[in-house]
Image (cartoon, rainbow over all chains, first blue to last red):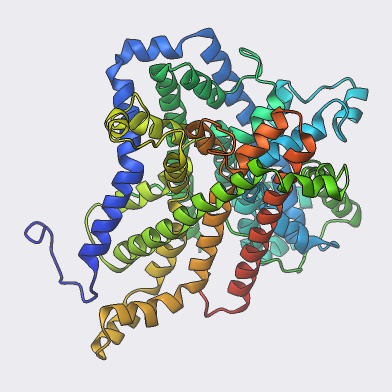
Length: 280
Length: 292
């Protein structure tokens, strides 16, 4: 290594041992198991992959997973923005407690969220009963999947938008107002562009999380093949039937999707940082 | 190659300073809409857990904890957590030391790899361990020949719990230690302190809150992990069930009070972890010398 890179002897000790341990640990725990996934998928070849993925049941599961995740992330983008706005800008009783509880969906085990949401939305539940009176059934329908995914994605948008709202330069807003801009104009021309990247980041994070979600969904979904079966559950089903190539193909699909989203998130962040650097 | 990172999410210190404010009608509307949304999606689910757990009275609630299966599930959860947290704490410290204090090629790739488990569906995490250690997997038959059972046994549950909690401590330590630089450690070494002494007396105290923060998140996730553990557990009652899996089993057997009782214990732990996390964040914003 010394020959290739310009090597300044580090002053601190322990470089070799800590880096060695880090690389070994990551290889054993993360890299080797993950490479197994890609090797098994590669072994069945491109045709095998397509054959495993292009079945009606898999496409239905993927359509539900992607559609419901997108819908849930969208609901969170709108409602999460309003929540973040209210928390940052207004004072109301219980504000700090509400703020602390926003992270609950991260802290609560997914199985717990799953049975709690199902109990609420079941036909006799606190939310299910009034909804039924309106002719809407949420539990055991695709709507239930959206409900569960909205729950687990809730903190992402709130937590990404909050700091952006705090950082808004109030002077600019005041200046715009004093120059005669209406609130609506200030919101559309000043606030939304400033908060936009954070909102997009939060949306993408919520979307990515929802794609892989399992525990909170399987109780409320009803899990009917082709109708309310999500892709992660189908992976489990295929595993239980010892259809390893099928499970792996679907897993690779999910993994690629979340990798693309991760890439997008990082591009948004870089773009936002560059813009902030250019302005300030 | 540049780093791919999953942004860390933090609560933001709330300060009441609305300079330009909307009319009180708009304000009330927005706060009302926020609270209605949170009521439906946050407060009611939390309330439902405790209400359903205590729905048949305290004695039914407590009876669940005297079931041997539930006790075994609690024990297994503690075992998995007791492995995952110290291992990932050690890993987090080693990774942060090497990444934050030294320059080396491939660093951004390494940092990306550390975040990777967060981007993977829990189900896929379980699946990859079956591919390696399952009976049809790479090492499965060899291990079985030596009488070692990983999948559908405690080792598998411990391993996937370690996998899903890899990033939590490292993610907190790396940015903070990078921001702190190496001057303090170099000064200590110049003054004659040994390597370990420098680490324990200089580095560790300066990152202790970030460390506690990471350990809190790591513990909460380890205790509550469901999807990944579910895939490798095999659901053998009293043997390979963690608390989260016990919730599922009891629920599917229509023992709703039992399911919600175990769930309420997990929810209580989640609330404790939120309280610790909030306290550390509050401390970080009120005591500027402690890194955030």
